View 1 (tube, rainbow, N blue to C red):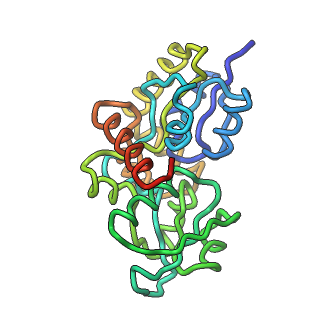
View 2 (cartoon, rainbow, N blue to C red):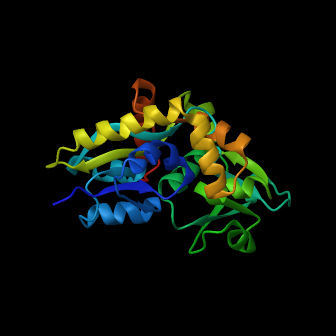
Amino acid sequence: MSIKIGKFGFVNNFLPYYRLEQNGVRVIEALPKKLAAMFDEGKIDYAPVPSFYYLKNKAKLRTYDFCVASKTSVLSVILVSNGKLHDEDNISIAVTNQTVTSLNLLKIILREREQKNRIVVMDGYKTSELLKCCDHALVIGDEAIKARMRYNVVMDLGEAWQDLTGYPMVFGISASHKGQDMSEVNRKVMDSVEWGQKNIAEIVAVAAKKFGMPVEFLEEYFKSLTFKMGAKEKRGLELFGEKCHEYGLL
């Protein structure tokens, strides 16, 4: 039986998996929430799972060193506004139901800042749909990158987490079910990451055509991300778990 490898269906997983896929490895792509569901159902053997999912299920997971984390600003997990100004304590924020990690990260940041806001979780994913409900919206992934170019960015959640804790925010961590050893798959992914970072000009050029995004932005974006769990990333993830417990989110 062939091993089923998954990845986030976002630009942020383009660099890590580019070389792997160029070498003929089939990778299943899905939004983080859907990817976690497929992982639960046994349709995926190895993938980056959302950090909040990991924290809820870590007793049954085996993790590896591939991750998706921000160094400071993440650029693709942002709070945007339609331009209307409101008192920070009384704003309503629409959030796509496609995220759990970023939603809980937002809740932590607001609690730490002692801001009292109403959060409205919606079926929509597009920024324009979310902003029909509220004057502010939390958007993630490629939709957030597009939103940066149209709307006012009120908060970059990676930057806000770094300001709060002094550590990177880990948005996804590679995992398999505990009874499986995917070390060889992880090694191949990390080899692909290393190749991508050494050949970033090629990665950016291909990504710019594929996603219709500016070369300059993509170069900045890929360099803003960390794809390997180091000591700082591990501590950042631990702190996220501690804050989730502190505020009753776990």
